[in-house]
Length: 174
Image (cartoon, rainbow, N blue to C red; front, side):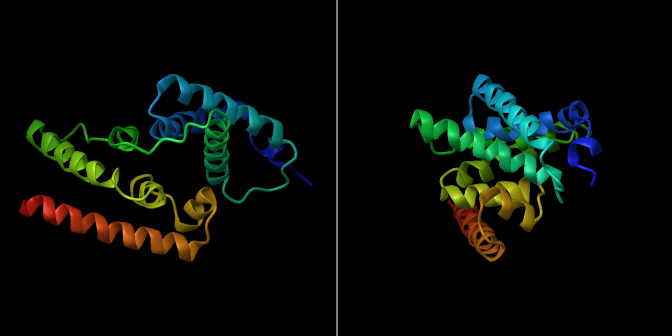
């Protein structure tokens, strides 16, 4: 039986996913150097377990799950669990460089507004919305990363979107 290690070259795996994993970890930590350390630890764990894996349906989902668990392990060790802040999500925001300056400024303002309100929501809702709506993961992939069932994730996303919409409407009115 062919293993994952024989299907994927570890260097290629790193080059394909290190940037997005770093952005994800930076979004969780809001600390550049800590995100780098956690990324190295994540890929170390991947390297150790890659040869023992017989099959992985979604390699990207598996990598993000390891990164998230590495993040949780780090904060459990240091007992410094922090709330996600507004700036944590900027790593995942990509402005379209082809937009004119005025449109780019408007797009950034809208994103700032969304992230400001997203940062004050419940942590699990933040993560669910970030993974599904901002990062573009499927419900199954996001549920695996957050270690919740798909119906629970759908509920989190639905309620989070509804709450975010309500807050944005109040912001525009006020």
